[in-house]
Length: 265
Image 1 (cartoon, helix red, strand yellow):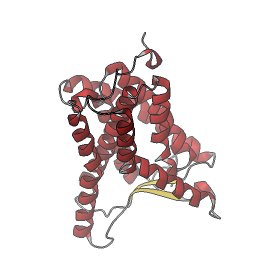
Image 2: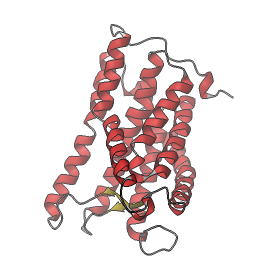
Image 3: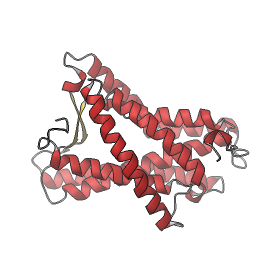
Image 4: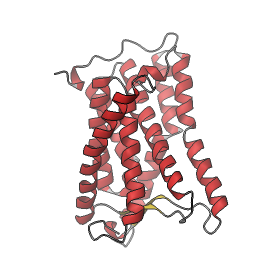
């Protein structure tokens, strides 16, 4: 069986683009997106560590209200946040097209919808279940914050926004951190192991605001997703899986938090 370490990297950068330009491109894309989120999460976790409260006694809110008491304004801000968060994805599409590539190069398309859906659903069931157990265990040991998935008002748009946020997170993370970054690092001649480690550590870094459990769990998830991406040559199954995992987490916890004893609250 082929393993990620055995898969050869792409031969060279896009025609007319030097390695130095490609390196700067990667830094700029990350600085405008999840690299900046990683730095923000590190700063946030520093605040957690220097607080007088224990880590597990502090709360990390994933989707918070942006205009408390003003639901229509809140909705407008939520839609604005989802749309603008996807601008770096559009930028990646533009940069790929500049080199005569496209989203198809990283398998972000609808060519194999049913297989992508089936694979994504299976991955979500396995990774999502394991992730929940990992979170409960990390919180019990005191290394993870209590995660509050949503502080949105109980209005008609709460569930649609939570689904939209889940899809936005999935597209943003898998296009940039999984597909684009691994593809570009291959073109720079990085080994598969080194690229996988970089992608996975980046994924963990911007989840550090949740605590060490969030960091470690997402690093593991990054390794698994990188292996599957290289095996299949497509990120769409991973986008599907990520969307389903986040949707189940955000909506499920919204209604279960404080009502079941096994879920930290």
